[in-house]
Length: 280
Image (cartoon, rainbow, N blue to C red; front, side, top):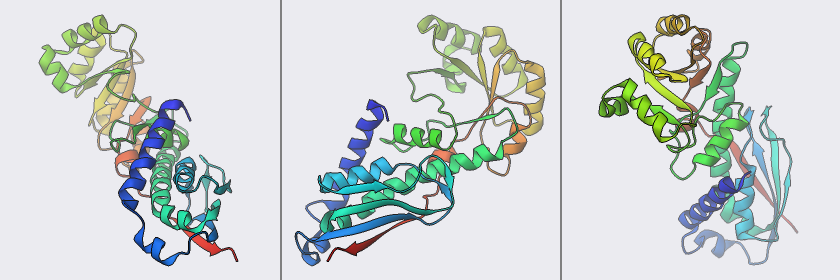
């Protein structure tokens, strides 16, 4: 995990615990004796890709610096389920941290699992699954790390690390050609991609020198025509409305990339549980 992602993780954990604990976990403080020790295991209860154990560990360590944590499963691979993390330490810390730890781990594992399903669906083609900027505010780096764990590739991290000239930019700049020209002058070395809705716009973008074209909400037939028409003169990315039911057909058109916002914004949480056993 790089430094930027670690900083985001620390911030997310801090905010998650502040949100959940507030002035104190009243139920646990009232019912769990101070100083009581406990063992617990987090278990994966359905098939999927595990990712984000570091987030769960950070939650428990924030509440008990002496807690003992042992990873019991491999991350970033498809697994059928089973034990994930053993936890041994202060019972109050384990119980109070349970929900925040599971929320983060289940969500990030869900993103990785959703990505893996799309990646599996396009196996045997030349298409790569990309994420988008449709991420949870404040969790972009973590969610994009989860996409990578699921076998996808990160598109741009934000608005700063690549050009993606879309219809509103084109309208404000006065057309595709002036938009591309202005971007080239501003930052010549950045990847430059242009959103195209038809073959006329594809031709304008190619003439302007765009290196990647985003084919927006095109049908499979339109995508096939675009691949033939472009004939390798630029990389092609299909985007808009792609689902697990349609992604294989989209990949078969010959596009190099397929961007899927759903792998982050609509990923279902992976089913996980935490079971506590008291130390006697």
